[in-house]
Length: 248
Image (cartoon, rainbow, N blue to C red; front, side, top):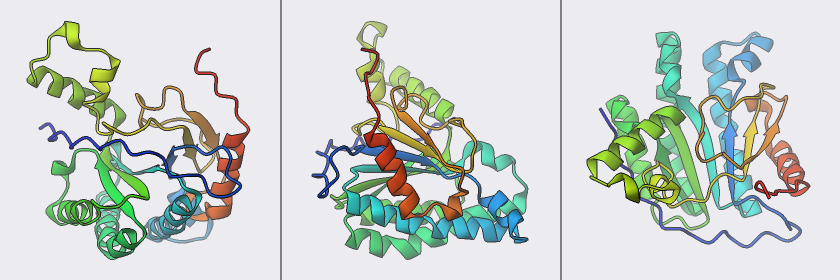
């Protein structure tokens, strides 16, 4: 089954940088890795690790709003994660559903618009409804677009985009990079300027593989539950030192 193509986001100008923020990425994407290792290091259950990871999201979103980031994308649940033990998958789905329901009012107050990247129709009904309600309720947010990549795969996104192009009947002569991008889950959004991965590993793990072609990468040894606003600021500061030539 192919997901219904999400409506393209109307391009929004990036908010003005806060005082002292001379060079900011418009779009920051984060691979939130290390919940299970964080828990094991403390003699806790994997469920407790995932719960701590969910708690770590709130201050990062708030800090992104404060710093004037236009788009924040979080890799919350990959399609590959279905291969984990059933109890862990159930925990992840329940945590996501309950967290979205609980946090949506605050996100709306802070001007955050929630978007979902992934095959939403494959999720359990309760989780899907919580996500759909958050998307609908937050549609007026104009300070930050929060992409939640849930049941997401970069390769699946490319397959879905290709299928939708075929379904639309576009001739091959009309298809270029701009047209193809219009069929991605992130249609209408700026590409990630900065991709952050926590937990020490240094790979994309099938996350935004088209969109990240010219992104800068920042790898943190901290496990995700320990990645706080100060660590986020360090990543932004490091980005500000980069010279981005885009092949030129």
